[in-house]
Image (cartoon, rainbow, N blue to C red; front, side, top):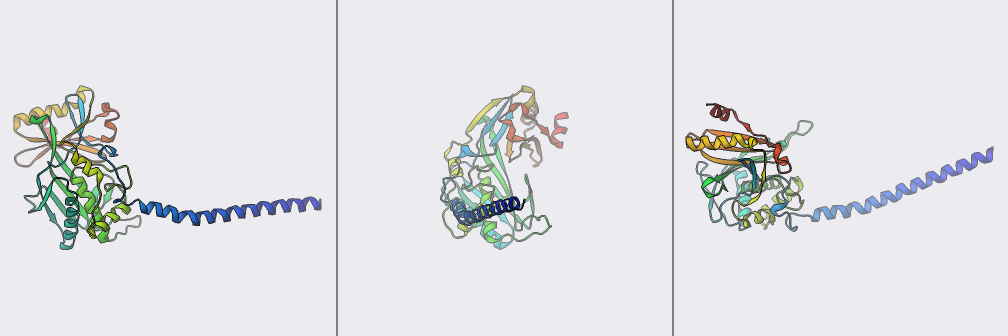
Length: 328
């Protein structure tokens, strides 16, 4: 009986020793592998990777439902145009925004930037303490870019206006604390949001690209902008190589689903409303018209990410002023 217990004890000790050896080897591997993994991640800088081409965008492009169909298309500023911009905010933040705009100008997209007053600006940049509400909740930036559709030119899309909102502080964390963004973080955020203002909607699926939802990459971008080093943004450059307003695809949907916009097109033609204009974000889109007194009549398009997979999920929600106009 005693011998049997000794055998069991010996087996237990051997098992425990094997477990300890495995734990030791696992610890050694983790110590060796972690720096290597960190090195690989750090090497994926936004300026030495190819990044994403225009067709790699993870979010939907601009959408325009009309006459029983949904058109998905690219929209940008017309090449050769001078894009006036204005900056509202503290003087120090303005210098960072100007640096981000210069970095985009250095990419030679075929457009030119000119700082002007807010009333003449085609891109308005507004800096505040924050936070700023966007599709994901409180954040450090938001951009809305208006794409005009020219009915007389086969509904060709062209950017006409963009508003960029930037925050100087981070959103509150789980403890309710916030902090001031570093110069690199703020500049990276400005560069990122200005990329949306140039027509690159959604975010790249490749981590190394310039327009990604990644704070680490944004900080690296800001660092490079502040150092006046050239940045590679192949997704945006690809967009500006495409013909203006290029249609990616058009899908059919049930005729009644586009009825609200079809009726608004008729009303706008009779009433002299300007438009249509189209906006799009990661989660929703909007088609709207503008009156002479700057009143907007919009139609919301929720869940845009699902529409090109299933066009019959199209849902158009008229805004309050639009409902009044439709019912008159």
